[in-house]
Image (cartoon, rainbow, N blue to C red):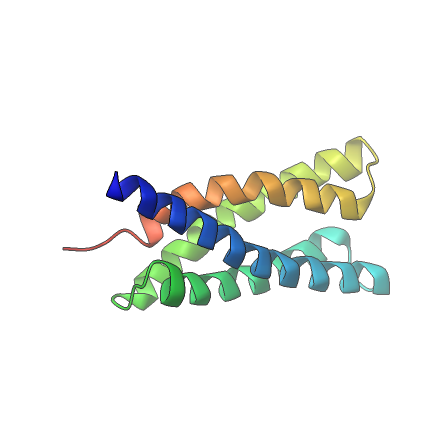
Length: 131
């Protein structure tokens, strides 16, 4: 029971932290797309990397309280992030490129899918307790 409550707490805090990372991601993406200087996929990459770095720092310090092997954990977190970005890019390609959905609505829809995927992978891979 204690483990279940810890996972629920971690998931809720992960969502709060993820919303901060996603807000940074979406803000950067929106500004770059609105400026017309970058293709939406390039803007997605820059925004995604920024949000991922912020999320790692906040999750490591405040959520999972991990201080060991930071470099390895950061690499794993970015590996999970890369997978998430690929899924995000694929979803944007379908939603925007094929279905002609609004670029901002498509980004928000993709973020919802990515949160669930990345939480589970990061909990099991990036922030797993070491013995």
